Length: 155
Image (cartoon, rainbow, N blue to C red; front, side, top):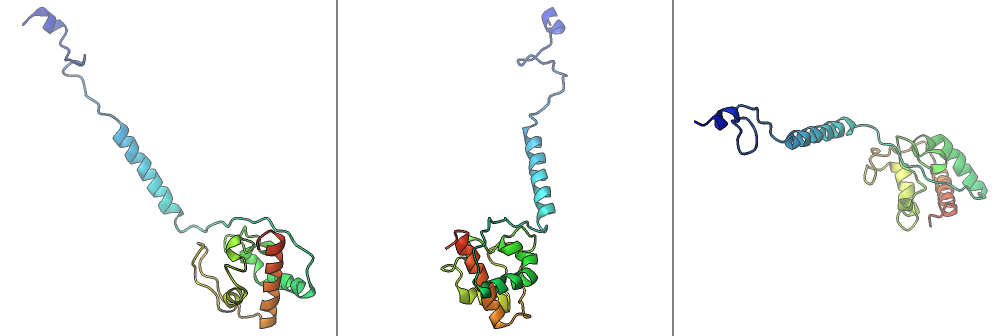
């Protein structure tokens, strides 16, 4: 054995044969990142969802639409926000293009109030039936919501 090999026992990578070898940390970093994403998703899965909040314009209202607004404030506002603008953790905004008349006709809107509606398009849970309202009150609420939708640019 030459003196060079004894004095400089390095391999082709320039490391001593007894030096500890560390593998790339990329696999571990990816595993930690995946774990954090999974844990965060799991922790937030059943949390209440926060509704978007719509910009609402209140037009001059007819007498029946004014009554509908008052009824809405007592029967619907807790879930759908002030004047249907949303912002609640319990329900979606009604001043939204998804609820315009050609997508969600009045008869469907009224049936949803009267009979409730299963969760379909939003993650706020099913809408309970509002069985304390008369047909006339449901008509007035519908008239109010449609007037606000039109004034807010949702046709």
